[in-house]
Length: 386
Image (cartoon, rainbow, N blue to C red; front, side):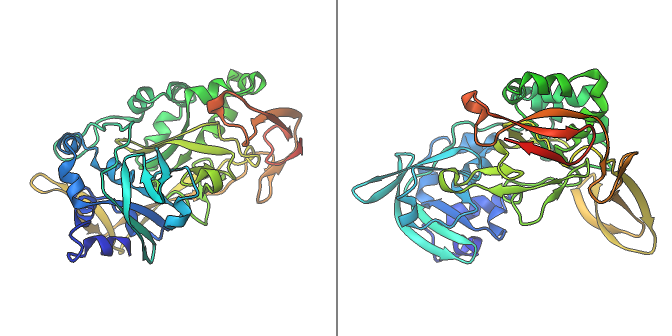
């Protein structure tokens, strides 16, 4: 495992990186990976004048994740062939070659390479890397996050989506203890403004408020605070709405990027923490063609005579782990809306054309190609026309 290599006291040149991972509870490298780690020399931490300020502001975890490329095990020869990659922290890393030596961000040189572990590969670099756009998360003395999701959304450019959540009456549902912690995917203000007029007219029409609510719930994973390293996986995530959401790793010119639903949407900002969970910025509005006829419900069951781990607070020792005799479990129950049937909740209704953005065009260059689905009102399946 990668963390075992860094923790080996016989490797003092890189042990400081491991100690920082442990000190700041960054456990991403314990996962299955694969990861490519650009591990700075221990001396690089001492040479960085901003390290104390970063520590005071709680920014060290972002710095550490900036040295990791997830989903790929890149040998030195692989790095020589790619100009850039996206770090686990979310910002790009620039890779260049000069006189057969590899440099990162035109600053740090790889001085030792291809140290292979069971879940990744390590390259040692001579300088500490620093991301350009780190975000400070206000916390109290005990480490409790002091900002709610509305504040985070406003501060990072997701005002329109936050307003939609409130207007649709979803805020109280998302923040209900039954569903928290939550992982949210927020389309940026730019992404919503770039939607075709026909799509905006439908989604934001007061007559379609119930339908909009279902679309918004498709952007929520309940009962999970998922880190960037854990988002991509072989199985799909179940959304609050009931439909499935997949997260996959990019490849080719998009190494390190994370995409939702077969690359229809890209994560553009990562791990925006708030008091009840975490949010990710995305570059489009998620619209699943199977969405429409699902009306999943939630049931609460209590079990006595069983023991389950739980958290409780102590005035002297903070948050502690214990167990309780009677346990409550919330279960998501698949259910079709009235008039819809079958596993995919299909039904009949009037047709309309719903415009969705083509994944091959990025919203950040302000261009999009529209595809049209001959879509049934409230029906999960449609006929695609190119």
